[in-house]
Amino acid sequence: MTSPAKATRSGPGLRAAVAALALPVLLLAAWQVLASTGAYSSAQLPPPLSVLEALGQLAGDGTLWQHVAISLQRVVIGFAAGSGLGFALGALVGLSAAVRALVAPSVAALRAVPSLAWVPLLVLWLGIGEGPKITLVAIGSFFPVYTTVSAALAHADPHLVEVGRAYGLRGGSLLGRIMLPSVAPAVFSGLRLGLAQGWLFLVAAELIASSMGLGFLLTDSQNTGRTDILLLAILLLAALGKACDVLLGLVERRVLRTHT
Image (cartoon, rainbow, N blue to C red):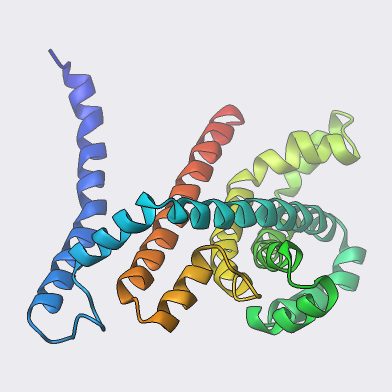
């Protein structure tokens, strides 16, 4: 028999799950209605069942998993590199007014460069292999992490810093034991934004002479008139991006629970 305490705890969780599923279900129903009323042709908007059939077709011959695996690999490597560099530079800028005055204006200017503007330069420097694709994802992941880390550390509670110094903490020990735990929520917000931005930049990255990946699947299905596969690629990008965000959110909750 379920105890009242467990029922009380599960109630909000169930309501949150229902609320989260409500909009996707409504959108799916609207999609089905629009596809079945003849407002759009099947070439413009195939019904959900056609997209499901395309999923079965691509999954059956194994090509879908190859596209998913290579896109995941590019995002994971690019995010790790971009967020690591963004964290390191953001920490330097946030902790040092001199570094901030020297570096911050230039980084702010580079942040305004659109993602596709990097493509010709990356192809010229790195060729058409995996290098430019991973680098572009890293660029997308770098800026949100850099911005949030630098801003959070620059505005860290000075009283906490004074307490740490009073206990003899300096440099890396002060950063790791006092400052970072105090700004951990902001740091994880930056990481989650960087991960989302990495998925956005992935599509642009896979325009670089790519023959595999979900971004390639998007453009290839457009060129061949397979709107069902095009919609499938969009849905897969959304699902994978959300799954990665959920995993990072679980890490965030565990870390924050440990340091609070």
